Image (cartoon, rainbow, N blue to C red; front, top):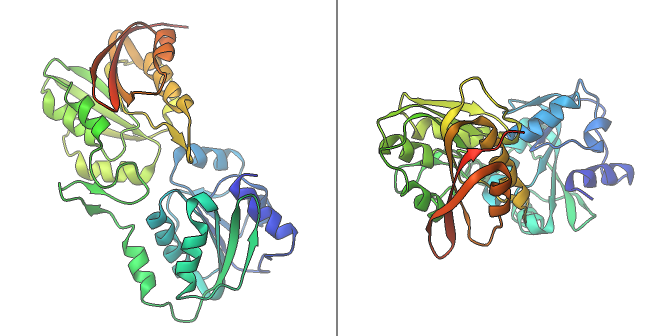
Length: 338
């Protein structure tokens, strides 16, 4: 059972009830039977991941990348892999609620639902819980006055600078600074890069900034990123006027009238907690579609991930140009056309 369907189960079992009136806010919303049970004129969904945003929009559900709601009767927070982000979203949800409104935390055990609900419960007592499918829905009535710690949780998810000066926030990839894989790929950038460049899954912008710094011959660099929160941070980190920013699901990219000379990527290889090489495979396919026939694709990956066969299916030539104990940098050229 997906974690979002746990809410529908709790609703059908009578463990939770929909308030008769007032807005219903859902943070990190995903398509689910629960959302369809809420009257559309009262429902407010927030999802900053473009892939899920598009699915919610296609299902006819009201969705925004960033919610501004007040006086809500019910607020739902679907937990993520980042405990700091989940605590921060709980704080935001509490501020959206009217006094006496209900906060629902919904998450898997692997996402820390037990520890996060205990932590919140020390300041705001829980009123109930429903366990299903290796997780829980936990209810917290909003008090008239929010405890001071709520402000601390909210501050945790504000964009802030790392010791190196990069703007990041919890919930995005490598929020504490550049990761070793990206560093290894950036070491391969040289002054020979030129023309039009695309950064797939650009995150908060480390690779794009390194690429632009390496070569003055780059005319334009497009950052494609599905997570709006990361893209907003990238706008602060990459100030070169040659950069352009696109809130986009990389897998949806199609051949363009102005193809790229170089595509770079450090593809994600997780959806949730399970490793899924198909995510990286979608990046490889997208790179082949948007490159010039003479273009090149540079990607970094964990050494154990079997991307070579995918590269061979999408490109005529492929080689490994760098490696470390944990990572490899692969270069592919001559994209195959369907």
